[in-house]
Image (cartoon, rainbow, N blue to C red; front, side, top):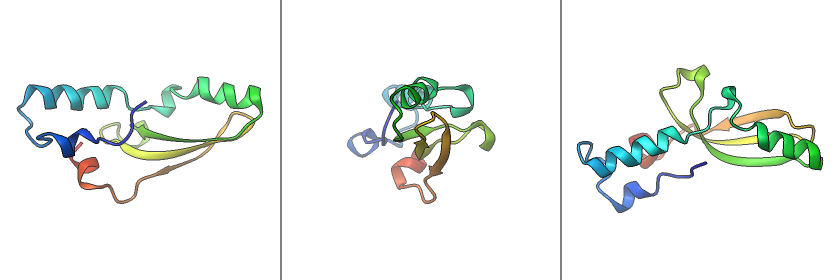
Length: 99
């Protein structure tokens, strides 16, 4: 799972035709979490087996929003292993919007 797209501030993040940027963006998208496809099932099972609640920061690519955008999100997984809430970034930063 990936975090904030920090590389954009350190490189020429908007140089879309640059091969390194293309690969970095592609890698970021490939590794974004798809909750609907079960990407968090292992963590959900862990929460259930240990009887603990988990708050997890992720980069999410939700299908129910078209699957074309990514969001910084905070996922709450209850001690019974269920996803109870997903809070997505409402106002993305410049770097997040670039990505």
